[in-house]
Amino acid sequence: MHGYSGDKQAYLTRLRRIEGQIRGLQRMVEEDAYCIDVLTQVSAATRALQAVALGLLEDHVRHCVADAISTGGPEAEEKVKEASAAIARLVRS
Amino acid sequence: MHGYSGDKQAYLTRLRRIEGQIRGLQRMVEEDAYCIDVLTQVSAATRALQAVALGLLEDHVRHCVADAISTGGPEAEEKVKEASAAIARLVRS
Amino acid sequence: MHGYSGDKQAYLTRLRRIEGQIRGLQRMVEEDAYCIDVLTQVSAATRALQAVALGLLEDHVRHCVADAISTGGPEAEEKVKEASAAIARLVRS
Amino acid sequence: MHGYSGDKQAYLTRLRRIEGQIRGLQRMVEEDAYCIDVLTQVSAATRALQAVALGLLEDHVRHCVADAISTGGPEAEEKVKEASAAIARLVRS
Image (cartoon, rainbow over all chains, first blue to last red; front, side, top):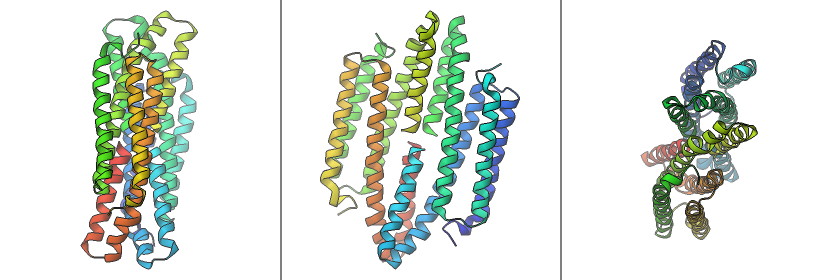
């Protein structure tokens, strides 16, 4: 079980919607949609992906990192470092 | 014809690969992959989407904005404003 | 003369305000302000800096890139590539 | 005492360096530096600010959030939500 397990179906629904947005982008390019309209949809898909990431991260801190901290020992610090590296990747992507 | 028309097939290939990344994310969630591994893949898909956006934007300035500037008149300023708004959405997404 | 020359004083005013925000951050750290409050101010300063960047970029496309396109020749393509690289740095920072 | 207290001097040094970068930007604008060179320095200052934010956030999770989790009770969940909101502001700025 992981941090997001309780919301698994909700995450799958969001990821399927994002898959639909990406297929919509392919249709726009195939039908020669105007560049700026394509870019607007790319920004919307990017924001949707980042919202999924922020949700996963919150669930991860609430469950996995919290469990490691409650247990204590070296794993707590390891989990904090791992989560921080994931946040850094997210901020820079 | 739009800025990206010359590279249409390349953009479609990249968008299909991103669609594959999103389906891969769904599989990871279904199979209860570790949160941080899911997050790493979300960051990779986000970066791939942003690379598509940067390519579309470069093609747009090179063709659509450049054409409007060469023609002159109020449309040139309109295109510059429109491109700037798209860049702002991209930076903030 | 550059793209931002007409708004030089406005840019200097904005940069001085950002300098004030950074000094405010130093005071907060010196006075042991709560981490989250410091982070909120860091986000505000980051957004202010990005707004300056978006303004400079719009002015640059409107003037420098447009001039190069009007003149034509290899410099036009060079300016488009240079602006695209700056946009990419901005999106990824 | 807060999460960053142990590294207070290091954070102050980094913030003073960023203040120097912002003053350097003012000089560049005053001396009519080329737009793209100004933009490159704005990106560098933005990255430096985000690195400070990522450090503060890591320290905050390691100390403040961890303490609240160890203590337990409603404050633990409150701290997780507060940290998540700060991460979201950071990702979107």
